[in-house]
Each structure stands twice: as C-alpha cells, then as structure tokens.
Amino acid sequence: MQGKPRLSEPTHSTLNRKSPLPVWAAIAWRVAFTVGLVVLAVLVHWLERDGLRDNSDGHISLIDVFYFTMISITTTGYGDIVPVSQQARLFDAVVVTPIRLFVVLIFIGTAYSFVFRRTWDKWLMAYIQRNLHDHIVVVGYGSSGSQAVEDLIARGTKPGDIVVIDLDLAAVERARLIGCSVMTGDATRDQTLEDAKISRAKVVIISAGRDDTSILMTLTARRLAPDVPISVAVRNRDNELPARQAGASTVINPAGFAGLLLANTAHGPKVVDYLSDLVSSQGRVKLGEREVKPEEYGQPMSSITGALGVRIYRNGRPYGFWEAETKSLAAGDIIVEILPTVALR
Image 1 (cartoon, one colour):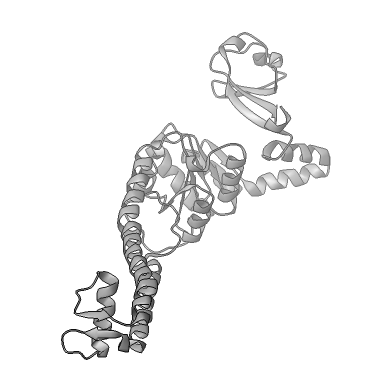
Image 2 (spheres, rainbow, N blue to C red):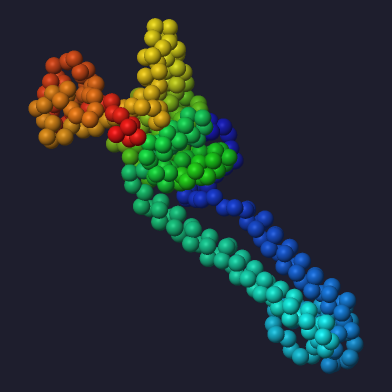
C-alpha cells in the first residue's frame, strides 16, 4: 500500500504487463537446456568415437569429439571429421539434427523474447499510455482499492480501462493478473500521476491506507487535474474535512459507514439489507447517477420510467423527491435514481 516505505522508484513510470519469468531465469533455463543438449551429443560421440574418422591425423581425441559435435550442431560440417559407422551416422541423423534445430529455435526464441517482443511490448504500452482517455485511476491497491476495482469490473468497466498505481510490487502484480494497467510509483509525486494521464481520467479513486498520505495524494491530483472527480477513503472522521479541502469530490469513511449500518440494524435490519443491496454489484437494485435528458425538461422526477428517482442536484445543492424543485426538472440537473440490475431488466 502507498503508506509503506519502499525502495526508490524510477522517475518515469510506464504501463506494464505480467512477464511469466524474470529475465535471468528465462535466460538461465535456455542456456542450461542448450548446454545439456551439447553435453549429451558430446558424450554419445565420445562413446561412439570408433565410428568417426579424422581425415587430418587419423586419431580421434576428446577435443576432436567436442569440435565435431559443435560443428555438427551449428553447421553442416567441414568434412575433416566424418561419421563412418552406421551407428554414428544414425545418431547424427536421428539425434544431432533435431538438436541442431532445437538450438537454432532456442536462439531465435531468445532473440524474440528479449529483443523483439520486449521492444514491441514497451512500444505498445507507451502507445496505450499516450492514448489513455476516460480511464479510471485507482491509487492504492489494498483491501479498499482492490474491492473498488473488483466492483468496477463487476459493473461493466473493462479492466484495461483501469490504471492501478501502488508502490507495493505484490499489490501491483495482483492488479495486473486481473487485466488492469498498472504502474509502480509514488502517487504523491507529480510525475507518477502525469504518467497515468490523470488530467484525462474519468475519475480518480484514492485509498492509500494512511489518511495523511491519501490527503497529500488528493492535493497533488487536484492540482494536476482540476476538473476530474476525486474520491478518497479516510479512516478517521477528523480527516474528512482536510480531505475535502485538499480537493476531494467525495470522501468515504469506511469505519463510519460501517458504524451507521450497525446502528441501523438495531431499528431495521431490512433497511441495512436494502442498503447493502444498493451498493453491491451483486444486488437486485443499484444506484445510478445521470444528467437530466432534454425530453425530461419540465417534467416531474416522479414521471421517470424504468427507474425510481430519489434526488436531484441543482447548482450543487441536493433536493429530495418530496421537495418542490423535483416537480419540474431543468437542464443541468443531476438525477440520482434506483435502477434494477441488468440481470433483472
């Protein structure tokens, strides 16, 4: 999580994706496999050295066997040492030729993996990064951040439209495994958020695990993206006001919200059940927010079909369904409504 100290990170962050093996391990197994094939061929040629003929001095030494094996694997041979027995020729035809093909394929595969593919992947990620637009930036992939990402995906957001930023390599790896674009970096720094193209984001979600870190990230994000909605989670109620002053559009206090739900169970457990239904992506109903449509101008909120309007926001002020302002919708109004889930439509 963002609040934990980490090793220093690069000054420029690039989107990346999961690699099956670290570079050293991928190279090591290729080298080991190639050496193993060569050793096998040398060993068999040495055991069957009587089936070889040296046209130079007529004597087959260990060096001659090693030389012949390497030449046979890498080229078609020079003719100075040749197999003359049936066993030696059969071994060269059945074993050495496939080994030669394996070695060539290993070298080509290594060049592809560590030169062509990595260059392509780096270019592709840089291209995606340059063209990020209307994406969701999630800063901090702890318990709250990961839950937010899972719920976003459950509600229909494509994983590729989510950019996760965290300093914790394990957290970044988890986000990458579910298909998110990820960055390893410190989101309190301008460069990290600029690399995530925060100014072109649809929304920013901040859950760093520490209130002071979250507020500093909010302050940095708001300065770089004045018009982008920012939602931040804080643990202490006293930090809700500083978070709003730092520029948060929405401040969530998980502990406080849980306390409210617990208190409501004393008076109406069904109310808590319905509230949980509303906020869960798996519920029968969900909350939606949208701008009023032109055809709805002048109409009462109660006339909305397919949903249940519960509140409007006009010039930043909320009005409930019982208030006079909801009797005539106007341009610019934001409607909060309760909708059935897609499965029930």
